[in-house]
Length: 109
Image 1 (tube, rainbow, N blue to C red):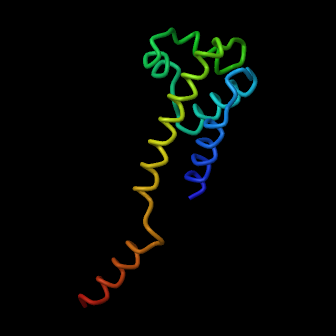
Image 2 (cartoon, helix red, strand yellow):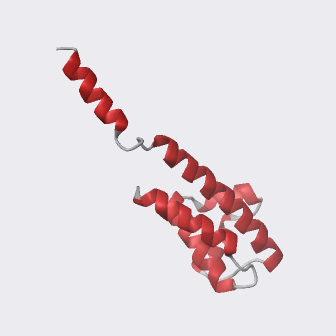
């Protein structure tokens, strides 16, 4: 469950992100890449840019124009929401699936 909470916190931070704040941009991009295990190549392809540009964004040596940052935040927020939804669907609801399997196995003896 900790991962779901991390994803929710990241989603909230992306929603509140200030595209004028270059430091916040680098920090949030780094968090998204780490939590979602994104690769520079995949991200670059999605945005139609070079992998070295994405690498420079991620390591903090450059940042795109604030208008582009706003678009990046929106796309990253969408990816984080999708990941959160997938995690929630995969998580058993309060262990009910496990308990149900145990009870079914006991009843069949």
